[in-house]
Image 1: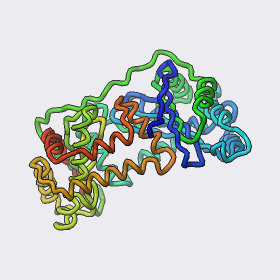
Image 2: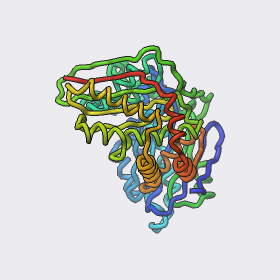
Image 3: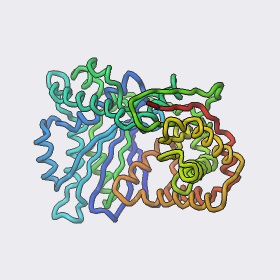
Image 4: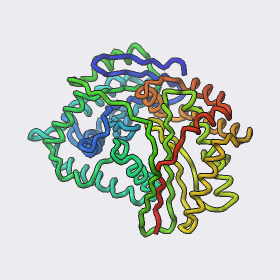
Length: 420
């Protein structure tokens, strides 16, 4: 996709245009970047859905829905996510491509999104209390719901313990105990502040006329801007003095084992980083991987096992579901597989299958609307700016010695086990 364009609109607002002719819809995404901060995260998580509950011009969900119906079934939605030590608040609208309509609606779509984001519903100097209370309940349920997904809970606890004292340990969903302290007035004043001070990325994906889109977005988005915050780069290096062993107990039937490793690899060192990614796929990237074959299939020691890389923080983690009595043996076998990686004991078949899996995954990014938007946003905030095609080339070139060179940096930091 060589036609992707990045345009600086000034005031720390960037626009990325991603031409896609295969879809009948267009997607416009607004990403606000914040530093993960214990004092802010709960407010940001609250805001994501609150803003799409009603605005000045369309003060109720019903009126919002009617307007979206008028725009041929357009849909606006919001979310909050974590990228390394950044918390991302995103607002998105998906609309029908004008080519399939009898009228041009893109300008109206942008004006509507601008109304939602830049002119929220304000009563007595704050957000509508009823809406704030509803979103507090929804967020509380979402936070409490993490514990129902034991695999995710185990991962969250691992990062909380592994990165204690580091921003990465902070949950992007915020904290239940903070909800009662947030008033509608405080939340509104805070929202005005983050609109003024956050770096903003706007991404448009779909089939459009470039000049027309740039003109509409430049004229119709009305962000009030102030002094923009600096979002610092994560510290990805750490020396391990002693491996942490953490055990939690819960009424469960299957143990959850997570092992967190520090890779000490900068994602900007792309040769080493993509060797790490291919190595992670060889280690635990699917049915072709060492851990799947040697621990799950041959030893029948786990229900599932996989490894993955947290790009921004330089963490490789291994997650597995096991019987409680198999804990020590599973830990030992994972260490053995990691040792074999460091020794370069990688077959040609393992390497080829791992590359194919990663390349197919990269190629599938464009199969649905939004995949490319998130990809190019991630490339933008990491300032790497590689295209999908360039990453595929880098993955294809990785050799066993490159993986050995990357894996020699890796050190075990934390072993976490959730048991009954």
